[in-house]
Image (cartoon, rainbow, N blue to C red; front, side, top):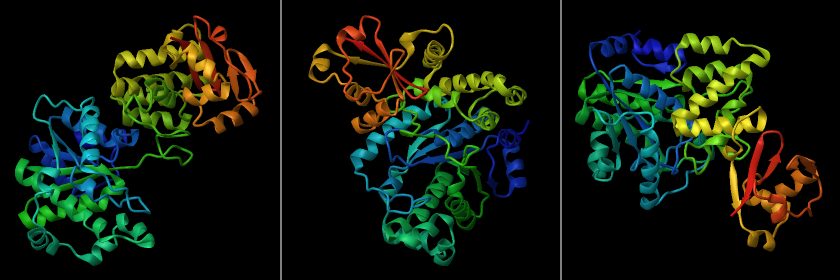
Amino acid sequence: MHVLDILKERGFLAQVTFEDDLYKALERGPMTFYVGFDPTAESLHVGHSIPIMAMAHLQRAGHRPIALCGGGTAMVGDPSGKTDLRQMLSPEDIARNIAGIKEQIAHFIDFNGEALLLNNADWLLKLNYIDFLRDVGALFSVNRMLTAECYKRRLEAGLTFLEFNYMLMQSYDFLCLFKQYGCRLQLGGDDQWSNILAGADLIRRKEQQDAFALTSPLVMTHDGQKMGKTASGALWLDPKRTSPYDFYQYWRNVGDPDVERFLGLLTFLPMDEVRRLGSLKDEHINEAKRVLAFEVTKLVHGEEEAQKAQDGAQALFGSGGALENVPTFEITANMLAEDGRLTTLLAVCGLCASRGEARKMVQAGAVLVGGDRVTDIETLISSEKIGAEGLLLRKGKKNHCRLILR
């Protein structure tokens, strides 16, 4: 099966240039392609999983991936999808963020062969601005750039000249990768269509060679929410930001209409199995959700962590399973003596974002201590109540933490 047909069947294709030519080019032999990642945080979030999985499918089909970290472009900031100027990052912040991103991409992409992980700071920070304007800037129409979706929203609030350079810089990345590595295809989210298209067009104009753009849809849940948005913020790939258990639980609790789509996009299960699982109805759809949660967690965090998360969920919501795999927070007797209020512990262990939220949750009857519902915000937790086995706190139906003494 042609890799483009695989990507189509699994839901990865939103827009593509010269599709027939790209089919033929991919058939002629291994093609080098790239995806860019701007290091605006130390971790990628689950939205990045879509282009990363597309990369993995192309690599499995014999093509060579380049994961490009935007150490240079991050110093400018991508205006796409933003109504305000992005926060300016220091070189030290960018370097730290790139280190975290590299480790996460390696869970999906095999860098032991010909795959590359590069940083565009290696060429962008060395640019002579006048030479760049004459060589690249002269080929861009300001009128056409202003019609691009990535600039339209920013024009309303005020687009800085700093951000206006972003499209030129990303296009120049594609040109550099074409010259140095023969890269002919760029992948990305559909919000990057204008930037990716501009890069492919730059190669065609300057080099008179074929170059291609391919974007994937920005996946929304069936109720219009952005995928990976939770009550506590983004769903991160870094286990220190989003624990493997919470990551597992996110996928375990997705809406029924979303299960088949996410199985196609975020796992390597055969599509026959994806369709079988997606066709399950009523309580039987829980089987598909368990498979989805386990497979996605395994890809991001490894099979051992996925199994622990599954066991923890089983201990809380099913029969069997190991309670030690439930999210756990260690506390000392001294900490309890200093402030053993339930509302403080809910905030400290991360079940609530603040003590204020904890008070509201307790007063609303949304907190259970052990198996008992608590509504008194002055409730104290003692060392004796935690005991040797630990004490389970619950907020709402699906958020748990086990306190243990150390």
